[in-house]
Image 1: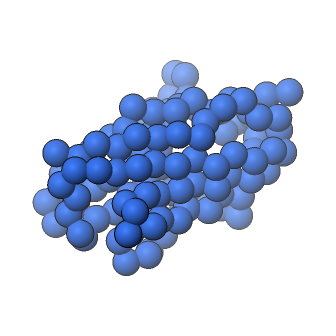
Image 2: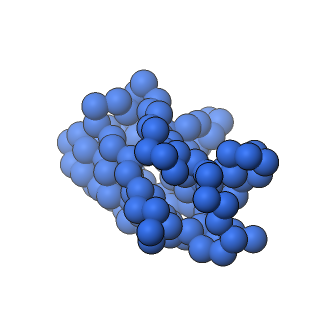
Length: 117
């Protein structure tokens, strides 16, 4: 089993920054992708950004140039640096880990990000 624990959410004003962290523990397959998804009220969960264990990244168009995903493989951590935040970034952000061989995936419990003045 794999456990994911997110931290770093909160309330921030438009234009501000937040950094989300996700700690993974348990039986983590070496070849994996970790990522961040978000779900706003009344909307479907969507991919924000992902990064493979080899360092390949992928971003939603809406966050390109504002968000940066990174990971520390030695610590089994993934981070999401969010800059120039907009009200439309308000959502619950979920950490995800996917085994790239079996496609099995795991989710964290989510952390609320609210962008409001």
